[in-house]
Every structure is written in structure tokens, then in C-alpha cells.
Length: 72
Image 1 (spheres, rainbow, N blue to C red):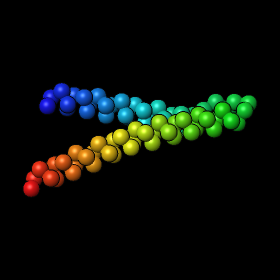
Image 2 (cartoon, rainbow, N blue to C red):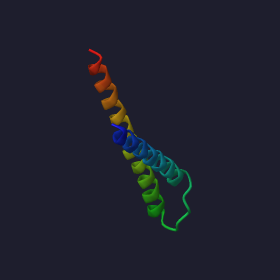
Image 3 (cartoon, rainbow, N blue to C red):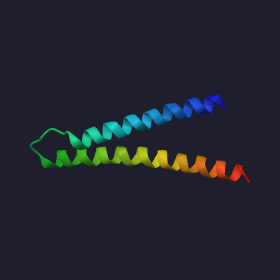
């Protein structure tokens, strides 16, 4: 039980770091000569944020539904 809690805390911190890194990628990118590279960095940052948010939201929903069913 305690190992699961420590694992979840570590994963949540990794997701938070991914979200911060993705937002940093989206907001600050150098001006490359090719606009294709600017678009790739924007899409990669957006993808990182989406992946982290999908994991966080799905994990929270699973936890909420599990605790809701255990009260019955």
C-alpha cells in the first residue's frame, strides 16, 4: 500500500514536470530559419502536455470511481 502511494507521488511529479516542460516548449522556442522546425517543437510540447494530462485525469477518475464503489 505504501509502495503504491510512493509510486503515484513519483508519477504525479513526473507528469507535473512534463506539463511544465511542454508549456515551456510551446511558449519559448527559437526562431529557426525553417518554420517547419518551429511547428515541430510546438506540436511536441502540445503532445507532452496532452499525454501527461490524459494520464492524470484517467488516474484520478479511476481512483474516484473505485472509492465511490467501495462506499456502497
